[in-house]
Image (cartoon, rainbow over all chains, first blue to last red; front, side, top):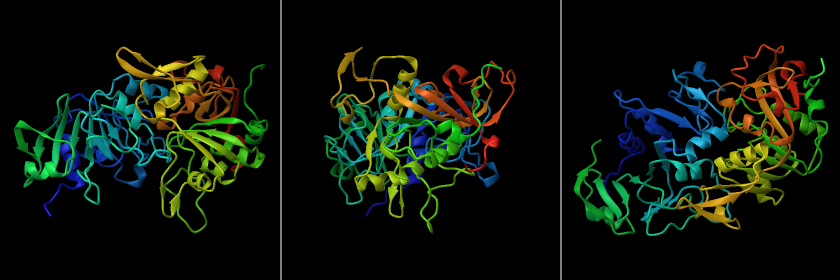
Length: 221
Length: 246
C-alpha cells in the first residue's frame, strides 16, 4: 500500500490556499485543523457560524476556557484583537451574501460537476445539516477536503453523488490524501499528486475521467 | 413605575406555556446562551406535546454512570431535558446532535422509539425563517436548498440566473432566550458567542421570555450597545432573584 497523507498533512495542504486578508470559514473535522497552519506573513480572519469573526486558536490551558467563546464546532476559542460578535441571522447574511472569501468543508462525496454531499448517507435519515448547506451555497470559493476513497476503497469522487446533496455545483477545489483536483467547466483537472503517486493510480481510484493539468506537480508539503 | 417586565421567578415566567405550544429556544453548543432555568421551570410546570425549535435541541442529562457529552457551564441544562421528560412531540432543528454508541442524544432515542417527530432545516434558513416571523416578512426566496431534498414540495424560482426556494416565517408561541444583562424595559445585552440565536428569536414569538444574569437600573445599559431593544421582550427572569435550580 502506498502511503497517503494523514489528516494533519491534508490540513496543511488546505492551509496553503489561505491568502492574506481572507475571511475564512472552516467546517468540522480536517478543515478545522487548517487553522493551525496560518503562515506568519498572512493575516486571515476566521468566521464562526455561531456569531464570531476573528477568533483566536483553541486554548492551551483550562483557565483560558470561556463558555462565552466557542467556535462553530462547539470547541473553545480564544479572544483576539479585532474580534467581534453578532447573531445568527447576521452570521448567515455574511454567508449567503457571499462575504466569506473561502470556506473549507469536509465531504462524503463530490461529483465531477462539483456537487457536494457531506451531511447524510441516505435520504430520510436524520443528519446534522448544520450550516454546511448555507456555506456550500454562499461561500465565494469552496474547497472540500476528504480522503480519496472510503474505508472499503470505493471512490468518493463520482460522476454523480449517490448521497443527498449539500449543494449542486458548488465545489471549486478538492484536496484528498493523494491529490489536488480543480473543478472546471470542462470537468475535473488533476493539479497535484501526492509523493510517489502516479496519475494512473489516482485515476483508478476516481470514477470520472480526470484531465491532467499541463503543469501537474507533486504536492509541496 | 408603570413599565416593568421583570417577573418574580422562572416558575412565574413560564406559568402560561400551554400544551401544544411552539417554543423557540436560544443557544448553540455548549455556549452559555441556553435558558437553563426557564427549561427546568418548564419541566416542573409540565406542559406537553410541545414543538421545540432550536439549532440543537440538546443532549439532556447524562444517564447515571455515563459521562456528559461534553464540558458544559455550571448549573447547565439544555432542551434535551424536555425531550427526556417526554414533553416534546416535535423538534425543528439544524443540528439534531451526535449519535454514537454510548453517547446518543435523547432526540435519537425518542425518534427511534417513534415518540418524536424531527424536522431538519439548514441553519441559515432556520435563522432567517425566525427573523421573518419577527420582521413581518410574509415569505422569502433563498438559494440555500435549491437542487437538494430541501426544495421538495416548495415553490422555486430562478432569480438573477440562480435557483431559489420559497420559505415561510417560522411562527411560535413562546421564545425562551438567554441574555447577560437586562433593564426593566427588557433591553438586553449578551456575552460573546452566547448571543447566537437569542437576539434573532427575541420578538419572533407571541411571548418572549428572557433569562438574564443581571438586572441593572434603567439608564445603565449604554444605548449604543443594546443588542435587543426591549420592544421585543415581554418578560425578564433574573438568575440571582430565583432559587437555584428552580
